[in-house]
Image (cartoon, rainbow, N blue to C red; front, side):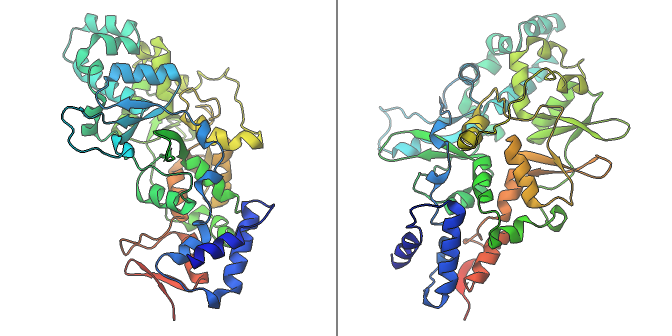
Length: 433
């Protein structure tokens, strides 16, 4: 309690942004170092545990939609498409006649699922059925577009949302509250493979919005020019060993759209790089969010085995790209915009985000936020793809130590602990003597 009051006193500033508050906090910690009595976890709390999630702009502007575990895929996909929402929370509705224990409202939520995963699953099942059915019947269904598959093939359209758990297509549901802290958000995003954190606020029932990876990285960037941040963010990418850094999944420009979609499904990746067959240079990408075009364009389903990926990525050539440059609305765009199905604030398919290994981590963060992208391709001097860097890779660099294991945390927290005279030992935070 005493430490909480110290933190509150530091934040009792009438004006100034997040960076100013952190400078005051950091100075207070260093100047009064000998007076601070550290218990387990307090060193971390002094840095990010004072910044509430409510500091992230636009949380309540993010679209909220719930699906029931018993909903059919036909109804679920139609609902997301019509409401222009990329993902939704899954609710487990108990039978009131058989439920013997009254559960908390938040316990009703059992997962989080996105539009692309459902569509790719349907397409994969359709391909299996198509191999064993009459060709003419298959073509008749395709001529009606993607939604005709949901209507005319019951074993696909009538499959329940809950059954997709068998294919591990759900994300876990880990809710946060507005008065939780950024430290709490970082713990969840780094320990679990989550793209969003649902936000709930008592006593209001249900969800009020979401916190995205983009929004958290944007908030971290507000600490630019502070020593603890720059000591990590100003390093070159070649200095890091990212958890997910590996050769990305690629298709050559002369392969088909069907090939790219199949790779998205098989690898469960956020994007497939499109490269020139001869030079291997990066030409563009097909993202899981681009699966939306399959539902929007009936001809794309029919021609997916004929249309080349290079032709497909240029279909947006006439699209007017709107950059989220209005500062006051930027946070809302990063939170709400990224959950829109028809997102005008992401790069075109033929203009993917890319960086080189001599770029700094901060440059990558700024580029991703500027473009509202969730990843960046790493390329060499010949513009050939050498890796894929995701927002989660970045968040892990600022993640707290894992207190329930012997695994150390990211660079920021190692620095924070050092400055506070603490270290992680055997999974616990201990003070140096």
